Length: 163
Image 1: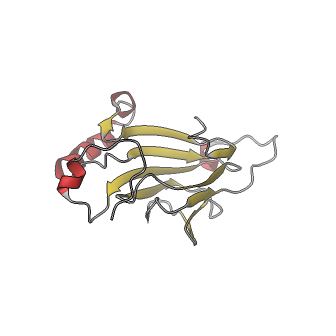
Image 2: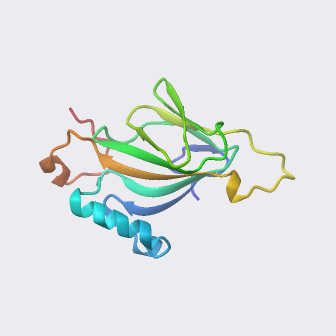
Image 3: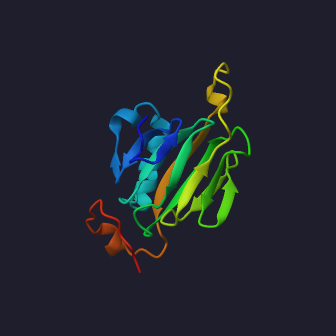
């Protein structure tokens, strides 16, 4: 849990990073060895997007993530819905609002302004369970038009506009 660079206005946004900027988190991968083994195989075919992450993102009802933009249009972000309690968990990218579907991938270009919309938090007396929490696996991939030379370049943490 953290405030993710000031993006959380209310509630909690929990993440568990498996890879950050192309680097494997061995400690976390010990907790999910099969998923990391799959990602290791993917890396053999195409380099991980070093402008992104592979992470679990958990949002309970009542969490407010402020509108924001990703750091570069060189990447695309895959959201695999693992647990989607209801259709009130939505994401707005630009002028389009979509709903996650369990077991389905939602592809976004996160350099466009986007925000996550969640249902209202339950009454204080109601105890949340993991079944109430929207859980998504996020995998950042290179945009299809990024060249191998561009993939191999060294990047800073500064935002990058491409083409």
